[in-house]
Image (cartoon, rainbow, N blue to C red):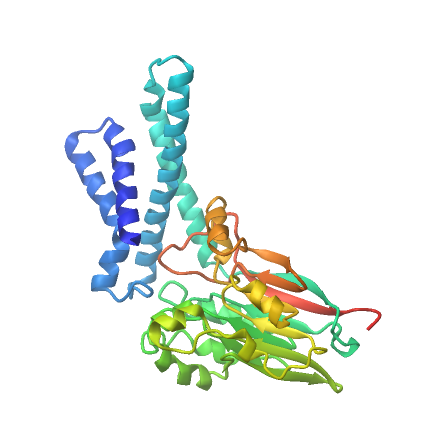
Amino acid sequence: MFHLVTGLTALYVIWSYVRLLSWPRRPKSLLSLVVLLVAEHHLITRTFFGTMASPELPFIVIALLGCAFGALIILACMLLVRDIVGVLWYLGSRFRSQAWVASPTLLYGMGVVALTLAAVGVWNAVRVPAVKTVELHVPKLAQEFDGFTVVQLTDLHASRLLQRPWMQAVVDKTNALNPDLTVLTGDMIDGSPAARANDVPPLGDLQATYGVYAIPGNHEYYVDYVDWLPVFDELGLRLLFNEHVVIEKNNQRLILAGITDATAASFGQLVPDVQAALQGVDKADPVLLLSHRPTEAKTSAAAGADIQLSGHTHGGQMLGLHWLVKRANDGYVSGLYQVDDMQLYVSNGAGLWNGFPLRLGRPSEITQFILRASPAH
């Protein structure tokens, strides 16, 4: 379905844009071919250069393909707006000429804008994310945990696009915050353990007073999930599979729980189960739940979680596109939400999938949470 949609998008751009250029037939035919190849580059790379999740191509090739594909999508969106306005103008002006729709100034201008925005989007996607600090007031939290810091890393997507230097920079920036707890909420890698052998070692440098914990995201299952488990263990990442651990400070407790991802069902692995993750937890103890997807937030709230940290959405990646991502994720896309008695935070993520490496208006982030106890507690 994905390749069908991208193919139809290419045909729309060829018909609504390339066809209208005042170029000779041969250059227009060549440009049309390029548009089709860019639209279907995911199919080509997965067939000859790795997988859909992890094309094993040089950084510059992936970045250029991402820029070209992003420009294609942005241009298609602009053309759609132009065509809708054109139809309304045509009807409103009593069927007068619509020559402006194919004016060279408009066509070249749209092309330049699309390429420029795509280039900026790729740059935003590959730069090291800034730290975003969020205070969370937790009614059940004991005073002993007031000021407790949790750093969330999500959607790192280690790949040929986001390689070891980038990973090391993210880890160094995280450690500089001196967190009490560091959590990774899925989609840490793209590619097999052999393909990412040089890129993931920085994760072993993560440090936090009360430990470093993680959960799997959907991409972990796409790429040799079982083979990755011992690698994560060697890196010192304690994965939580529908289970919880107790963090104690001065005889007070904070429950950290984590669940697997729904994609597990397609690979015969353990499916997410919030009830199992919180089995035996005292209702008086505050619960911090890690869930890659935000979609089951109401279930988490009903099960007794006080905070849920999620990722998966990448914040929508682009303004406008975030509305579609929001609809696909039960209305959650970026930032803090109140879900019944639970606070849900959906991080924009530190990285993203290399098949669409653009960010425009939805910046990446390393998220630092400062937990605050109720003064009356």
